[in-house]
Every structure is written in structure tokens, then in C-alpha cells.
Length: 392
Image 1 (spheres, helix red, strand yellow):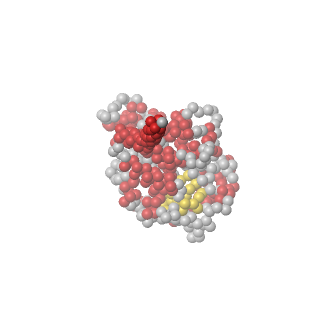
Image 2 (tube, one colour):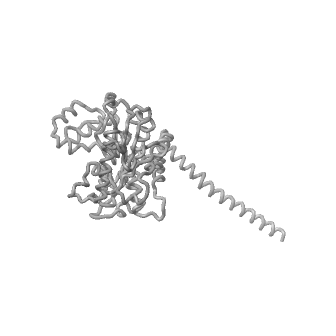
Image 3 (cartoon, rainbow, N blue to C red):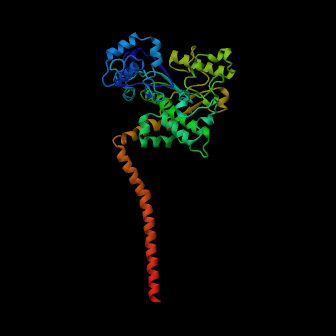
């Protein structure tokens, strides 16, 4: 990235350049301009034969409200954003994954983290595409059973994963609730974590791990408190973006009726963030002293993070944890990509043949062997009966 020397240190909250929605290829970005052009009724242009001069002229002449009203027309998938950075060879000269792998970034201090229920904020806007919505419902009504869970997943996961039978089977195996009996809340929590891990948490983890691998001091937080003043239903949990309220001191605004504990949490947020911005160390106060609660550095061995929540939630437990979501992130960042790469050249007919062969080997042939053994026993008994009759 150009102008990297102008960056002193960085804070990333619930997002990363490696997220599936963060950067688009140049051809995708250009195709989206055609879709927007058509949505704005500037014309009816083909994706195969675009005229970018006409597109530019349309956008420059259009009323800003018209652009805003149609800006989401180019995207259809869950948690996809239409206008994101593009690797243009000038400002961004390579993909974020390449930069992280090769260490092509400034090795400075990084503060990063994610929230407990990242994807719920986005899932809620997909309600009508998943199932008919009643006027009022609870968490257990949202995703009440496995059938609804599977339908929601097929609507919300990326198309390439839904199309791959092996990838989808692996995802379902990783996230299907393990404890029996499965409760309605378990289905909802499972889907939220599936989408939250894929779109948010695991990408922040990836960035933090790469940063510490190349020698940068890294501090990771995990925000797990649902604010009492939050207007969303309580069952939606600790949502994407709601740590910002605490970082900017909203709990001290009396009209929102935050608790005293939440004011203290907000003070911790502001102190850590301000210390980091000044010194690169969230523990080092302005006067040179250090905070009472030491925030440990993040590394690949322990993956220790600071749990940001109210005092009573600790209940004598440690203020730090490990991960977060380490096992599930290994699935998204290592296992699943390797699986999809291994079967990338395997077409549907071959997969069908393999499935049928597996069924033949493990079901049909076993059933045939059983009946053949029964037939041999029958023949033995028949001959014994015949011998007995002849000797009579």
C-alpha cells in the first residue's frame, strides 16, 4: 500500500482487510457500476459490452438521492457491500492476503478485536427472506428447528459454498449444535456464530496473528457486554459496532440511563484506547503510570485477549481469555480452503459417481453379502434335508 509511512499505529474493530466483503476484484467493481447505471434508469447496458464514458456521465449528472437510493442494487448476498476498495495497482498494489503472508505492511502497534454476536445485526435485516415474520417473536421463534436452520443457512452463506456439497457438509458438521436435546436457541446461536466467524471474528484474528508473527506489538479485545440502553431485543446479544458507544463515552450521557458499571466500562475503554493512541501501549497512562488491569500482548502461542465487559460479569474469573473462537477460525482459514482447493477440479458428475460408489461399497455390497450368506445357509439346509430323505 502506498503512503504506508504516514501510518503510526492502527486500531481495527470487528473488521479486517481479509474479510470476504472488504475488497473486490477490479472486474467485479466495474460490473457493479453497470448494474447501478441500469438501476438508476440511465439506460439498459449489457455487462458484456459496457460503455464507461456513458456510466461516468450518468453518475455525474444524477441527483445524489438517486444514487443513494440505488447504491445497494449490485449486491444480493448476505453481508456484501457494493462499494469497497479495489486492488488497482496504484494505492493498493496487492491483495490483503498477499500482504499479510509476505509481511508487506508496517510492523507497528496494533489494537484489534471483535464482539460476541457480530452477525446478528445483519441477520435481522434478512428476516423476510428466511421465513414469514410475525409482529412479535422471541429468540426461540427465530430459528425454531433444523429445517429453518438449513433454509436460513442456504440463504445467507456465499453461493460458492452452497453449491459445493462437500463444503456445505463440512460447514454443517462444524456448526450443528452438539448437545442433545437441541433447543430452539441453540439453532439461532449456531447460525449467528457461523456467519459471525466467517465474516468478522476470524478475519480480525487472522490480521492480529499475521501482525504479531512479523514482530508487531498486538493487543486483542473481545467485547461481550450487551448494553442496558440498547434498543434491539435482548436476545440479539452484543452486536457489531456497539463497542463504539462505550469508546466515545455515551454511558455518561444521563438521558440514556446506563448503569454505573457501564460507566466504569466506558472509562476503561476510553483509557485503553487513548493510551494506545498516544503510546502504542493501552496499559501506559498519560502520566507514565500503568493501568491496574494489565492488558497482555497477543501472540500465536496463547492468543490471549482482554475480555471487555462490566465488573460483575467477571464474577471472580480472569479478565482475559484465549482465542477467541480459535477452533472455528482454524476451520474457516485452514481446513475449508484446503478442502475446496482439493476438490476444485472435481465436477458434479464425478462427485455423484463417488457418492454412488461409496453407497455401493458401504450399503449395497454389505446388503448383498448378507443375502448371499443367507442363500448359502439355505442351500446347506436344503442339501441336508435332501440327504435325510434319501436315507430314509
